[in-house]
Length: 299
Image (cartoon, rainbow, N blue to C red; front, side, top):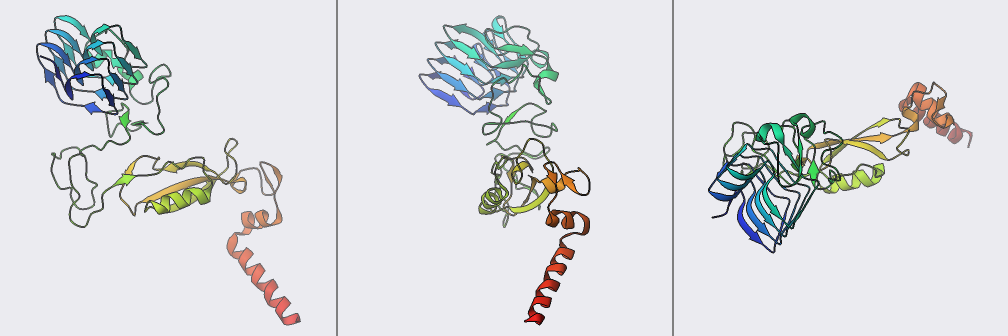
């Protein structure tokens, strides 16, 4: 009987952007995510739970026949007797590409498909030969501080339970609800922050404001990002944030460069930019008001 952390068996289907974290045990055809697939496509999935069985046992999938698996990984401990693999137990006439398993946490150095990596290669900062070709803009997110998924990539549409809380709990005041939770009375449901890197300041402001976020801006010089465009956003795009939360945009600006008091990265600064650099916007406003009063009196 096929056993999987998410699905026992799947035929002629598509499995995309899924994950499983629970331990799985069975006899034959046992996988951390799926026990067995036939003529299936599996993309952008992962499993982290321990897997144990007798035959055709894999950290992600136990048995693959005429299938395609792309951009997936597994980290759970795997044990069995026959056709056992860190990622895939047994494979027939199938393709596994850009998929990985953790050889250390799985205690498996072999797999019928995929590439084995050590833990430091699979956790942030990720090795150059790992997660090759993965979409870290719209599908995956990097766990940069190991606070979400122990440093391994996680799905952008995924939410996690805060440590120490159980599924179904109402979060404490001021906390964001995790997976399986419902917001408490009067609390807003968190939403994904739009990805605005590379947009102009006005475009980024419009998108974030429309999504219900408060926008703050600061300026930095950049040799690679055109003036007026977003260098980065904090927090990064795709992060779950309650409406009304603050997103900071870092905008490329020549006036923010360190090229001296009278120059920027393109040469001499304009008089307005120079006044702003030396004396600030308030004095510029004062000078403009004084000139207006003088002209009015002469009339």
